[in-house]
Image (cartoon, rainbow, N blue to C red; front, side, top):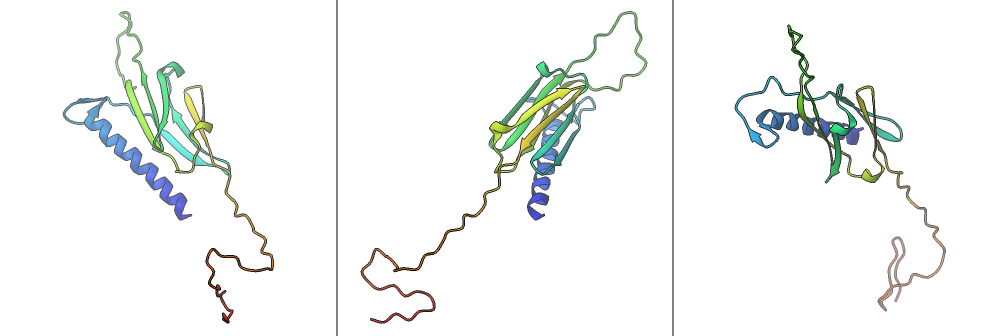
Length: 165
């Protein structure tokens, strides 16, 4: 359970660091003070027996507006949600939805095969499936009775046996 706990701590730390960076930098351009207009999509990370599941809420973002990359054990979701066109016939009384570019980075476990990652989007929800690798099972090696062979000519003492010369 410790490995899983460490994994999720790493994921949370990476997300918090990304959020700190997003508040301090806006895609390469420095600006002063926190932005009240910054939009960061909500992300859920879950685990099943066979995979890690990342669900991202992206209402109003088309798949053409998304870029999903993996590099050096970090999966990055980047995109942009565009502001709806204002109509000259409408007066906006309240605008609470956030728009603009976004970036989310998630640290993946070290044993994940990035080529097997799958992503799909439907109804404003992006689902990323990160398959777990097949567990490496220890191979049992049959031990046969016989002589010990070495590269030296000196006799070899086996544990529990006395060496007689």
